Image (tube, rainbow, N blue to C red):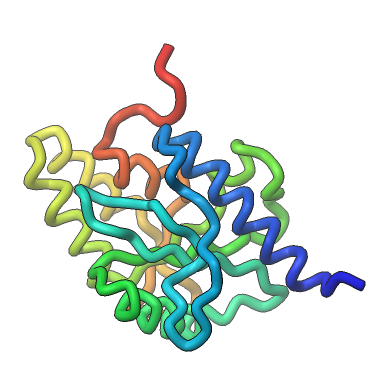
Length: 169
């Protein structure tokens, strides 16, 4: 018998892979095998300006943002990367479509967001303006002043250096 909670988590991971692989047009993005105490997130192949990004996916009844963020920090250290994101299932928003995935929560600490935006802003003046918008649009995570969130679509745009997502027409 399959554990329903594990099944939900696997589904969120699988659809996060599908969404990011589509959005970034990168077939190297996949689910990460477990490494026990040396776990390095749930996905492999997500990159930002050549650096690996640790991605942790959570689909829990009651989000425990602080606990999940601490877990991500350990996994970022295991991966030896300054970049990480917690993808949290938004209650009432489906995950089994690209559209639903675009609206899921991409959670970052204010420090990690600023780390992303500093590098992103250096790429072009247009990116610097987009970074200001991303900073302004990011919303505080409930009951946690050090964490912010944005839709996964906005985070994917950041990873993609502001370029359009998905297949170009």
